[in-house]
Length: 201
Image 1: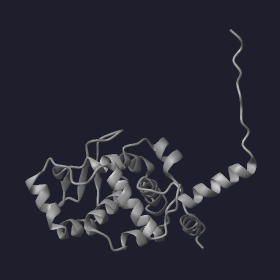
Image 2: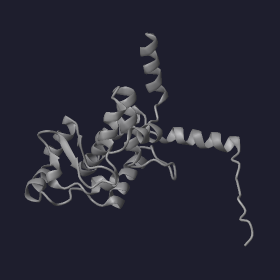
Image 3: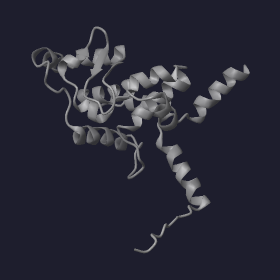
Image 4: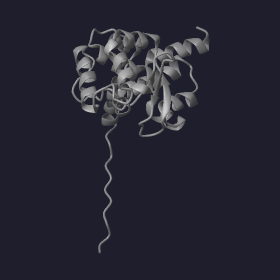
């Protein structure tokens, strides 16, 4: 047997820069998320989007939520089917209002506590991506989609909410190391506000 050949590929600096710029444009800003949440849409789609934004839940986890995973009074959601760790996450009073407004969902939770509340992964992805396209917030192959909200969740809690990264990791079912290396993408506005605060400007 001959000696195996090892090939290396040197990435051009411009290619690296262009890739970095593309990734910067991938992440949602606070204004974009507000625009998404305030956009008129079907109630079920609105519920899915709010849960993605407010809990950092993965699409696969959302698709497996059943009726008795939701406690409306306590504003909690039990994520039992997860690729990492089962956990409890929390949603806003506004989402409670949407649940109550969506009377069919509340009835469904009571009558079918073990039935799934949301459609499968492809349908969730389609609903979210369609909304993003309608708002001019998504182009082909730009990397934006339901999972991008998980990145926003971690980034917002850390940079805007000043939340300890260990607690963020618990909410996400990940480790602090993974959250720090993978999910934190502060916008320039987020960083400027922190600099202003730190420098007392």
